[in-house]
Every structure is written in structure tokens, then in C-alpha cells.
Length: 127
Image (cartoon, rainbow, N blue to C red):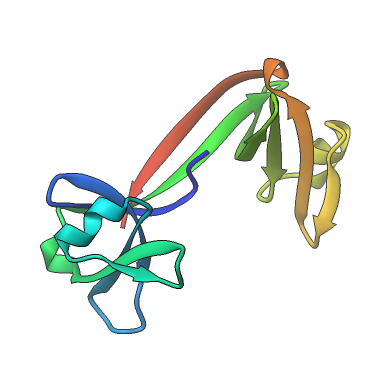
């Protein structure tokens, strides 16, 4: 499930994050071959590259959603045939009627069988 900021740099999509410096975007890659493209290993886990926003073809947020019992919910994770659904915006009574549990103020979650979800889709929002 993809949920977060992404950017297209030289024709390739990368996970991205904003820097404290204005107009600087930090690209993330898990591919060691990206070292040849100027990425450097960060904390032995991920390869990063700081670029100016003007160097990017696109910057956008991707959110993954699922339709569960006729309700549109965020789909956060998938694990062994189950999907973690999250309800944040909406009527808490609907979330409770779906058997979701409040895990934080205004945040409801539930793991469901993937077969119980009628659709899984991404929505892209330009940033």
C-alpha cells in the first residue's frame, strides 16, 4: 500500500519528503544502483538524494483507499491476506458499526480479510 509523498526525478518515481530548506525535496530509494545517480546511503538502510523542486517532473501525494461494506476507508498495510483499514474523517458511529476500534482520538482501525474488500485503489494529489 502506498501512502505518502512521491516525486518523479529523471523519469523515475521515488518516495520523497520535504526538507527544512524551502524548495528542497529528499528522494528515497532502496536500490543500491541509484548510487550512480548521486544517491548516498543513509544509516545503512536507504539511499537518499537532495534535489531542488525545480529538478522534479512531478511531486504528489498518493493515498490508498479500500471500499469496505460500502464505506471508503484508508488502506494502510497488507499482511498475510489481511488489510489494515483506517477511518479518520467521518462519523465515528459508522466506524464503530463496522467493528473498528478507536486507537487514538478520532482514529479508528480494523484488520479485515482482503476478500471482504470490494476495491483497492490509489488517489493521487498534486503538491
